[in-house]
Length: 153
Image (tube, rainbow, N blue to C red; front, side, top):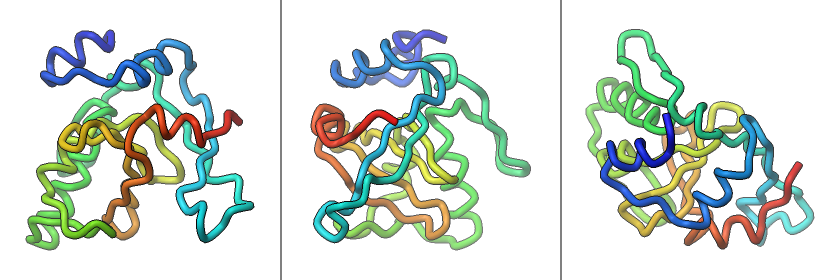
């Protein structure tokens, strides 16, 4: 599925910088990004494997939870989390964030079970979803800013 169709279905307009980046990557292309530059200035960063257009639409299934395209897979994780905890929010260094907001995320890459995503409700800022604690962290105000700090693998 083409990115234009995904945007239409989700009624979103993704940032131009991300769309240009997406047009020039191949499935699984890796980029290093240090999400803790103050604490670990010499650390190259985590290696994020990016989804190309076809991977964004690839169906992900969680047994007993459902199916979703890869760009919407956080909705599956959060459905499972909400069923098991009965909580309506998840933790972030910026405060509690509604599960619905994170479930609406646009997942763009993964690393070791964690997801890098764009938040449509925060001007498409870049966030990390940590699967082991089911919490999130904003790592960049925009994809353009993220790319300035990232390094191709």
